[in-house]
Image (cartoon, rainbow, N blue to C red; front, side, top):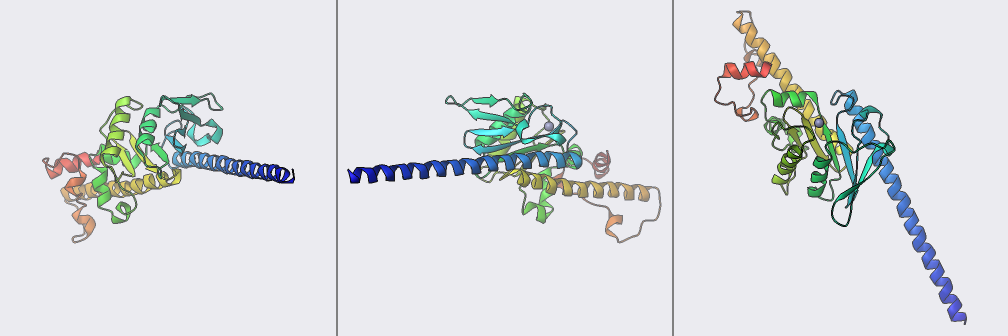
Length: 281
Ligand SMILES: [Zn+2]
């Protein structure tokens, strides 16, 4: 009888300990989820403030378990999002994603398919996808530059951010854009790029978390600003020379900036004059 009482007490204690462990880990996961969704809101707010998106542009998603991810809502003002505005997409037994309504009752981002495809191919240590429209990066592609080649010219960027091949101009939120973007990322496996450009549109970055993605966008945008400033200065000096005005000889600026050929999209056969003119547009 005594042995039975001891056994029952021990079993109760073990169950209580398991219950407590479960509760603590659940609380931790909820805290982690809230913290990461708050970070996603902050990243979109800062992106808006820096002019990398207009009010309702851009989207972000976060994978917290193998079969589910949170994604920003469609059409919302991205500088004023809250964690509860996100839509939860959970994979069911058939492999299809089922959506939980957000607080706003909003649909998921129009780029849902793009996020879904990227989460399917990303390794477990990459959990976030961020899509933005950073001005100078889009302008560099519009001017005919290849982002991967631009990044290769800046060792401090190439060291921390791997830039993939640009995706050609395709309609936003379309299945073909989602497919082409996923193909560019998966084509580089196992060394996935951190970021790729979408011609006439924006960028998609993947990372450990949303801040990791944000930093990839920031590094690429910064060097595109530098290259565009240099290209504009080159145009100004060329005009001064053509007008017969004095330009200090021997300085780097007077010689103008020569972009590496590899940085220019398929325009190598054009004359230097025409290429320079195209960069100024
Ligand atoms: Zn977009």
